[in-house]
Amino acid sequence: MTHAMNERREQNGLPETTSRENPMEITNKDYMFPAFFNGRVLPGKKIHRLPAMGWNSWNAFGCGNTEALTKAMADKMVELGLKDLGYEYLVLDDGCYCSARVDGKLANNEVKFPGGFRALADYIHGKGLKFGMYNDVGVALCSGDQVGTCGYEDVDAESYTEWGVDFLKVDNCYYPWDNATFSNGANARFTYAPNIRSIRVSGNGFSRTLNAVEEGILTGNGGAKNVSGDYVTGIGTIDGTNIDASPGGMRSSELEFIVDVPTGGEYLLTVNYASGQEAGTGGWLQAAVGDRDTEERYFDGLLPTTAGTTGFTDSTGIKVMLQAGENKIRLMNHRRQENTLYSYAVFYEALNRAKPDHDILLSICEWGKTQPQNWGYKIGSSWRILNDITFAVGADGNSGHAEWKSNNTASITSQYNKAVIMDEYAGPDRGWNDPDMLVIGMDGITRTMSRTHMSMWCMMNAPLMLGLDLRRVTSGDEIHQIIANADVIGLNQDPLAVQAKRIYCSKEAEHPDTAYITDNTRVDILAKPLADGSIALCFLNLDTEAADGKYTVTVDRILEYIGSKMVNRDDFRNAKSYLVKDLWTKEISVATDGEFTAENLEGCGSVTVRITPERK
Image (tube, rainbow, N blue to C red):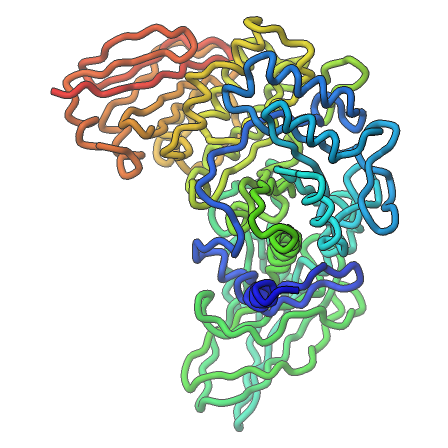
């Protein structure tokens, strides 16, 4: 091992692999909750990348993808001119490996991929494309194949390097330290704190007991006071896998106590708790003194099991240092986020060791479970924000099925409704919110829906990963015209790289940019600043029924919401007129009154325009 590699490991504080036996001990503060807010990426993370574009096998073929199909998709990406438009990654999703490791290593499924992954990578690279693969931070893939990276990060990184991989989509099934998809539900014991009835602080001739319900202060979201039971519950991170709650604000909770001690020195903190292994009540406690940014963490571990979730008992005393006067003691459990970040970081650092100059793009796919908008920027180029956009994937020649709206994540609007208010989490120095693959070309999605879907994803700087069987597309046909619209793609790939902001919502007048709204009987207007000083506007009808009437925004409203992100703001404000290009019809008009309008939007319809100021 080189001296440089030793220095990197000391700097990062990361092991070569994660454990399958116990949760990792995390001592480096770069991987702890307070560091989520410092804006610093981890060593080796590539920044200033535009959203990825390409094709992924999952929506088209599920686990039925093959080497022959993959080569056919590569051929079609070139034939259809998609490569020249920026669709560069061709990604193999689940179902491509042997179901178990061979001599401890990943291996190709010899029936589906008889030529091996290195030869397939060479074929794809020979087409001028880049090669992507899939794995999981858990012990198995979502298909159940026992080849997850957990505990094998070092050898898997060597394999991906040898195979010439350029892109890795890394899932979160069977993760051993959270109740992730297909994982043991009892793993919630690692991701929630116990129920807490009180704390006692003693030492230096002082002793005081503070009741959690009466004297504890709940911060963030998710925690709750059970007044009848006289305890606090739900301390942890809210599960973001579904559409139930907003992604904005603090998505985790803490319980604070203010303790006034007479002298500075060492004290014992005793927690009266009851543990469980279910959503809301776990057994893992973190105890810290001080505010988030200055905390000293004194305990981070699993407490002994109690006799049920209301079988309260006292913990062993935790030694803490307090100053004379008021002290803030915080009880919490941020392990759902910290563990997941740590696992992805161990894997990415293994890639850095295997090939220090690699350019692999890491696509974090944990479906928003651990609120990755808070931490994903540290290591990933993008992070999924919800569970899958469709579960009815294609196979054996059928196209699969997708929906415009649903009461779960499996629809275009479910994904959009979350992603549209997450713009402040994204950026060229961070990475991109990922509302999953495009479902254009699947059954259930009309031409109008497809156009709007494409406009939404491009305005929001979402990764543009096609998910259809490209053999169903011919140059110039309806689908091709949508996925190959260079003007719309140009919004997604604009070098200023700013996600659009919602500046108008017919259901929310006061806070259209941050309000989480799932009622689709509405019209939204998004505004996106562009590198040449122009802006894009997108008028969206989320309803399946037509939205009659006019919808107008002014220059002043645009500047109010995105002025600080614009290039040459004053030129836009003071323009004598504006060229308005409809990016779907290609019609160009001139606006002189500083107002921009769309009217009579059809059901699921949209109007997307690029507005360029003309100087006085």
